[in-house]
Length: 188
Image (cartoon, rainbow, N blue to C red):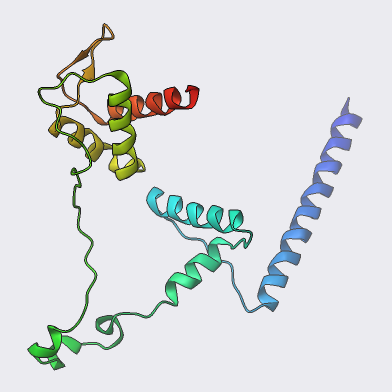
């Protein structure tokens, strides 16, 4: 029995040495291209965005790595305020009026969703509204926004008995019902 264990240990050592050699060869190749390996910590939304862009590039037939995506993002022109320190002190007020600055705002678009406070909806109508809300607010970060929109527009919620009542949507109910609506749509 000791012989078998010794044999397994030797085999694992060879595999480990092979992995180290392969890893070193890869890092040497990267260094010869003028690149370095770094380790970073990112939040879920950033990882989702990186993965989405990588997957889109693969589908387009021009695959790129996470490093290529980050490099492209960093090479975009920086706003003048980031390049020159204390630039705000040196710019006259009339020049500031002509600078275009992109500002991200959380704007809830509900024009495409009908007001259903006093309407009886069929299953297909509810599914259509749920799918529309899903398209307007995709991803995990908008789960509560979807629930708020459904509440504001008076879309009925399923109760525990399976009937539709005027109730409160939450993020989980909205996500589950959107998933089920997509499932029903596929069956048709």
